[in-house]
Amino acid sequence: EEILDQNFHIEEAVEWPGLDLKLGQVSGLALDPENNLVIFHRGDHVWDENSFDSKFVYQQRGLGPIEQNTVLVLNPSNAKLLHSMGKSLFYLPHGLSIDKNGNYWATDVALHQVFKLGADDKEPLLILGVALQPGSDRSHFCQPTDVAVDPVTGNIYVSDGYCNSRIIQFSPNGLYVMQWGEGTETSLGTARPGQFHIPHSLALIPDFGQLCVADRENGRIQCFRLETGEFTREIKHKSFGRELFAVSYVPGGLLFAVNGKPYPGEAELVQGFVMNFSTAEIIDTFIPLRKSFEMPHDVVASEDKTVFVGDVHARAVWKFASTEKMEHRSV
Ligand SMILES: O=C(N[C@@H](O)C(=O)O)c1ccccc1
Image (cartoon, rainbow, N blue to C red; front, side, top):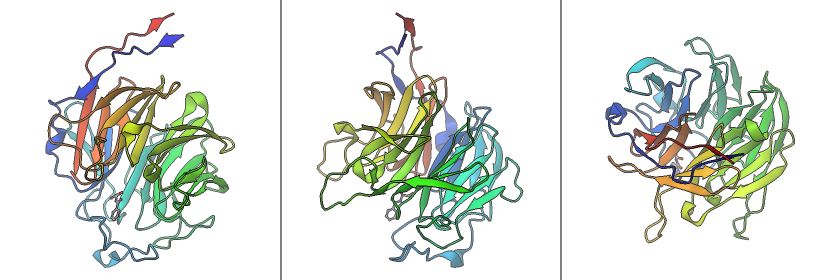
């Protein structure tokens, strides 16, 4: 059995020039099959209190779609722009993930839709949801937050969303299969397993056949069986504080997460977490050396333990790297 060394430590790679990029609100990060960093940002659009009405209908469609390229592909070492796409398609980008075939999966909270894009800039290969129409049936989302695609089955999982509280599974060609989850009755204060208060980010754990969800306003991670949606585990630490924004898994057993900024007077720091997936123990935490986290919104990690964090308010992407090689001792 491999023991993940306990003196694992990551810190900001301060030589990475990606902090000087002129970005809009950074909402999603992903790594493509060549380990390039892909940034999903909002260009000149912002999500603020005027963006939606009380029925979650987007109010700024008069602005038209974002004219800048919203999907940027960067060399992960020197932050050089390799490719950009996704102009005139999105209104308010949110989640981004890339499947094993290199297709991009994106959610747009203004359109209430999920997009499957080929790596070129042609027409989307698949669109789920009805443009600009929030809803909670099998063909509508309400501000969907993220997508995860099972590399084994090709099944599609959507976390839906700010104004729904469910995970929906679609077949590889986009047919509704099943859903699970319900809202948290905030009155009771205690959130039960399978209840969500903004399912905000997804991490698919192929090694264990599970899907983990950042249950944002419940400040916790919940994990479920991919096949059945059956609840398997809650991961919650005091140091998460009130909000847990994003979660990402790296094959080999490490889970990464970022939390939300504490309310004035609360003790918990806004920071990144490295956890041992099997034990759920926190084995390291990290914050930037340059600038500081404002609203870290997504986190993505590669097999060599390089981690990127995107921040929607700081409009920045930081790179973190492990400072010493992981010793995998066999016992
Ligand atoms: O959470 C919010 N936004 C972020 O998640 C984001 O994705 O930008 C938000 C909440 C209230 C009003 C406006 C924005």
